[in-house]
Length: 348
Ligand code: PEP
Ligand code: MN
Image (cartoon, rainbow, N blue to C red; front, side, top):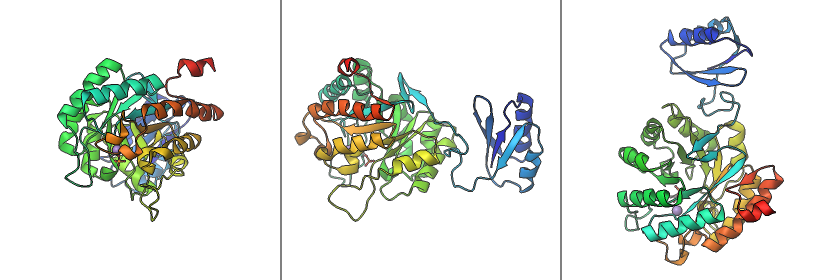
């Protein structure tokens, strides 16, 4: 249930509404806008008489029962887009955020070299997996804690915030000490205990869409993070599994505007995992920005032929740098900008 307060309500009226809800042993989530406030009721069961009781409270405009399985993540609850800062990078604002970096942190040199190339091209955030979910247990599974330490020192040297994956609830505390954004991977999209633990950490979370997860299920997974009091969730479309095998996954571009319509959360896209092929990454990146994506996550490697994971879908430094001005052109056409404007694009 959500309670929409009238324009010009006063604080006492809002406190009375909250007190009435808490009387029933329920909790509240507040979304305070410029002129109004929306109160979300959290918990079950909601007694049937509560709706009419709240409708008679002073300052209440409307009381709506939410039939969706998610509430905090819904547009109804929070009409304005969610915008938050990750260090000095604004997520969910007008500028499309560019995350670039290797699939896996392999060595300090490889990570630093890539971070410098990402930054020089206009990228905002460095990615790199230290804990890697791999299909086979015999594949490279990441450097673990040593990988986190490399990311930390590369952040210190380049100033780029870092995003890295957390695989298990018991690792959340450690990964959260290093990461500016916790990445929850496709394989863990519906690992509810992990989602809750990430929610409790208070660190922003990027939630990748599971490969067979429907949009309602995906938003409900985000709700697990948000219900722990962590509002800073990024949804990331990374392709779903279909009958088609010409690409690694089927990159569901339509999910971007669908999620943006249903939810206020920022929506990013990962055309690297979405396609599995480096030569498809530029066109799908452009399409994602044209479709309203608030950010892109792109795999970049100094030497894709020798990458320990996902080399086939990784861009070289040159290809990554060449893509950014193209993205800027598309973004400009829809009234947005991309990444950190380079001197060349400012002169344009
Ligand atoms: C990754 O980003 O390297 C990754 C493993 O992605 P996904 O969870 O989308 O497969
Ligand atoms: Mn990868």
